[in-house]
Image 1 (cartoon, one colour):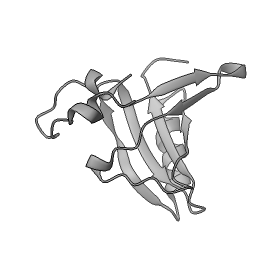
Image 2 (cartoon, rainbow, N blue to C red):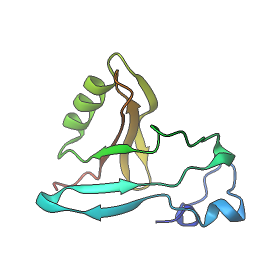
Image 3 (cartoon, one colour):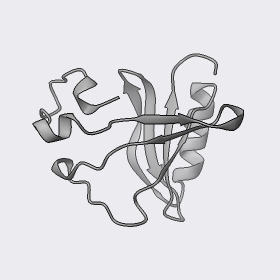
Image 4 (cartoon, one colour):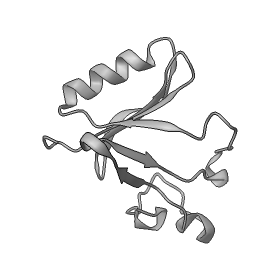
Length: 112
């Protein structure tokens, strides 16, 4: 999915032509139903690539309650990057744990 695929939102500035063609989400399914996901860094949105912030671990729990529990546990002693919230693709949020590891959570509302 590219940034140009994101539906326009009134509270979000438009992407530059360069950023429209950058990756919003890429998914690589691996063994056991696990998916590795990635995204491009957008300097226009204040992202700055520093070795160490170039990996975010994505979890897709089976329920909203489990998503909230894991987000709360992993952000304890760390920080919220984006609080859990409803997005056009599902329930999503991102945090950094107390060890500096970034975690992204996605729950589609369907059993995986």
